[in-house]
Image (cartoon, rainbow, N blue to C red):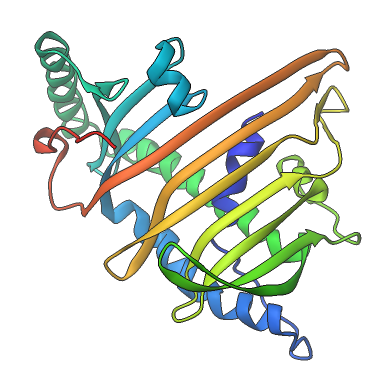
Length: 280
């Protein structure tokens, strides 16, 4: 079901060439946003941040403590990200666990510093290949959807164009992971001044089968992504994903995951001195 997680990244950037005769308002707006949001996507590795990962709604996590909710500090270390646990259920980890995290960090620093050139290249290549895969899926968006201007609204303090995205019936996904696009529809809020993506909402409107029809993503699967300005770029702030799926036609999968980003800073610090988070 990881395919659903790719969809938020897909909607951040839409690198594609447009036909000269296509002058509709919606496509002009999307076209202008391409370069801006491509720059935002490329800038993401330049920033350290805190990320909260929660299974189940954040309110349920706080009330019951039954689901996983953790905060990690993410920063680049020798060319690829390093994640350090700093809080559980919005409470900073205790001194004993802090020392364990510090020991793991120091061990990883030594490991990465002593890598051979081949090992370092393999590690960085894996990270870059993961991003390249997302970038490939991003390129499918304009082909997969038809866009229409639905109005204008203020969102996140920004005046935005609102675009409606519906499936293009002529789209043929080139890879399995892009198949989910054929059954989705949504709305996009685009900053009217600089054409950054501000908010994205999408949902599965018709079932989509995967893996020789062994698995099926159903209506009720949806996600919401919000971004926030950080200096001259816009970066993720909140991602909520609800999955409704089945395997072999009878095994049901229902889940809700929430991710929150905060405390962005250009990555001049290293993993060793990134501070503890404040609660959201």
